[in-house]
Length: 212
Image 1: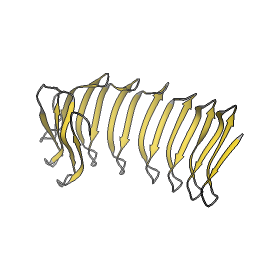
Image 2 (image 1 turned 90 degrees about the vertical axis):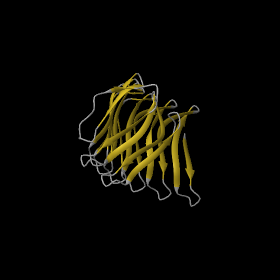
Image 3 (image 1 turned 45 degrees about the horizontal axis):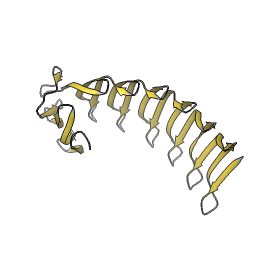
Image 4 (image 1 turned 30 degrees about the vertical axis):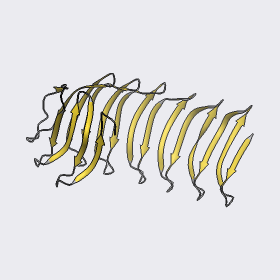
């Protein structure tokens, strides 16, 4: 039968359907303002078919498809203005093929490749201007080498990871740093800093043995 939960003011919060104790049928979650947050279908406790989530402004937040519990096919997420945030593809529940992530200005932020959920192949990272900054090379989810854009605007030859720590600086075409990070073997260390072309910091993350 149908189960309905409400907010304190009586507005719908959740409506779902069950059969023989299992989630089975349509399920819908709502924001307090009555707009739909997420909707999809269950079949015997497993998500199946298309699932869609929305931002509170009614713009689509994500679209994905399940095949009896496993993600299958295209998976797209969106910013609040409706522009694309990420594009990816799943096969039998595993991330497979090309993954793309975008900045809010729709410049490409990352392009990487996966094989059954593991990063495998080339991973390109870009700065908000759209310029390429770093290229990392993976085999079965293990980082094996990297390249970066040098002060002349050229992509360096791939460098294998050394046993000692190495500090890498990539550059914009205006010769100012675009990215700076330290790596030891396959682990990131200390601060990973992304810059704007004027030299101001766009984003900074701190790592210890590869962990933020």
